[in-house]
Image (cartoon, rainbow, N blue to C red):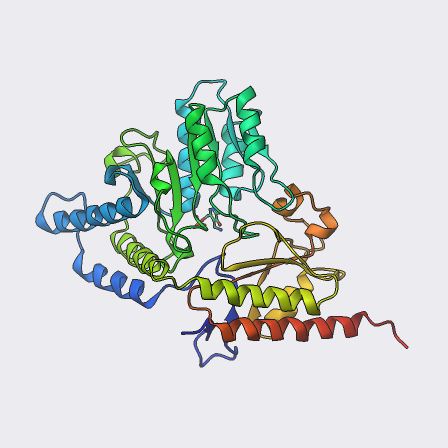
Amino acid sequence: MTARIAFPPSNFYFRPVLYFDHNATSPMHPAAKETWSEAVDRYIGNPSSPHRVGDRADKALNEAREKLADLLGCHPQDIVWTSGATEANNLVIHHAAVSKAEFATFWTSGIEHPSVMEPMRHHFPKRNLFMPPDEDGALSIDKLKASLARRRPAILGLMASNNETGVVQPWQDALKACRENNVEFFCDATQWLGKRPADGLGKCDFVSGSAHKFGGPRGVGFLKCPEGKIEPLLRGGSQEEGRRAGTENVPGVLAMMSALELRESQLAKGEHPSRVKWRDDFIDSILEKLAGAELVGADADRMWNTVSVLMPQTDCQQRWVVKLDKAGFAVTTGSACASGKEEPSHVLTAMGHAPKDAGRVLRFSSGWETTEADWLDMLAGVLKVNEEMEAIAEPAA
Ligand code: PMP
């Protein structure tokens, strides 16, 4: 399989696009699609209904709960199904705001996803702390320990890996430091799940995930929380033991688990090291051939699928995305200057990059189905666009 996607369907005028934006969303895997479509026909009942048709759907949902708990290493009753990671993250922060003391504080890194940072600003105004990472984009565990020795938050959140840079965060060490200091620990594992093993995440008090980042459908995810009570964000029916009202998305949950199990088996079979090499070859060529290009998080442990590069300067970085898009490559940038309003990535600025440099970032994110040939085509696309840009930049003779 290749990452080249005929989009929209082939009779349309678009040429196929080479898709390198899997951190935004990944296409649904055929196995997950099949599970979804079978489940739609097989589990027609509402899991809360009292008859056998409802019971059948409820059983399927609980089997999925057991599978996820098994992968994470927690109790099945710790799992609450949600509409994705945004809802799961909001649920944790809402829960903390309602259940902790009035003066309790919430700490995270300054490179979290907006679905963590915005609810924190909303629910913990003046009681939040966003800790900057080191220059390679990872939170310093020594600095965290030093801070915990002075003061303690009620909860500390740290993502497992960053969506913009792919830099892996020291969540296992942060969890340990939290345990030693009697602080609850929350991990947004959205960009980790399906790319690195889920095992061990269940030890965190709270973990969030979203199916569409690893080949499941959009609009479904989960929160792992301490068994028992969590202050619900959505109130209504008593679904999910009163922790999340609303009829559960049974086909979505089953398709998510089908995708996650498939990814876990790819990891167990050791299918990722070759992908690290394809990524590294791409990086080496970019750095060698593009004067002024810089790899973000160069010395850090990074996810095998993500490359974040500060590209040579242009008047507007959006140009790279537009030109690559026209040439048949879907990549993204951390800043948006289409409207003339440049907003540099908060992740890059938290890492200490000046806004001007942070605006130079391009993100290439591959998926499991991306091949070595796709990486080579992507490289050829970047070099071709670079030539075009250099030609434009040449002063008129
Ligand atoms: N957290 C992280 C780290 C993410 O990358 C994303 C998606 N970009 C989310 C949370 C939100 O996920 P969703 O949009 O599926 O709710």
